[in-house]
Image (cartoon, rainbow, N blue to C red; front, side, top):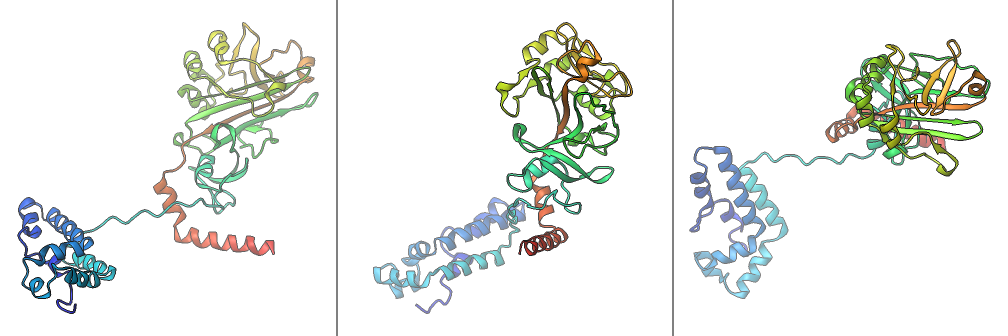
Length: 374
């Protein structure tokens, strides 16, 4: 079948009874862009069904009568002529005569195995690494880019309640050992005693949506206290360190128990959610006390969260009350406070992953890592 040389030409310039070019012009007479979109769509449908469309026109076409296209032998010629290449060329011609700006399909967002691993491949947060970084990322120290203070190393918990938690308060006190509070330093791991107010750490409020409090105490018994909250006034205290901003009712309402991350049978929860709602009767008022100078407690049941270093009345309590320094000094305690925010959007992650400079750097680092393994 050599004539016509392009069997799809009637899709581009229809001459049969239902002329979609004219129909689109009449339907969208006031909007040229919609006319073109309409014409392109009809043209593409015609191309995709080229064999059927051509055969349907055979009886009304002089060429179709001459070539007997409506007969089985003629239809075999149509099938031979209307190949995949012909259909593809037909669609290209549709786009040429009725140009439409189709949106480009979004590239996938692969997980970046180096995100947060190096100072020049920083993430925006621990949540960012959990969502877009290495698959099954471990709890460890990672590099993140702070909103006001550049790149810094932080410790991320990638397991508790879907992970993505950033440590900003950490005090580990061993029996009969002195511990001093170190304000203004981000704890880089679970062994470095220090804490920050988030505003001083270079974080912004968009990065912080909820907090997680976890402490343990071990002497003759083992106690733990583990919960999360998105109480606005408690979040505000995380930024400013001002306890007087905390609200007791709000603290109770937003309090939510979390499980012990280990063999819970060995540990006793000092205060559960129901007890907290009923017995919480103290919120700290120290304008610089943050989460260390007893920010919350139940005095009626002697359940306290307290971290006070060696310089001032050293007291470390995780839900228990110590009547004397001797009792307190004989206990092992560990207090941590974490924050978590939303991971960056897919659009942000996509733009970052396919950034030419980052792709070049990623390639160099991966090659160096592979070379080091040999």
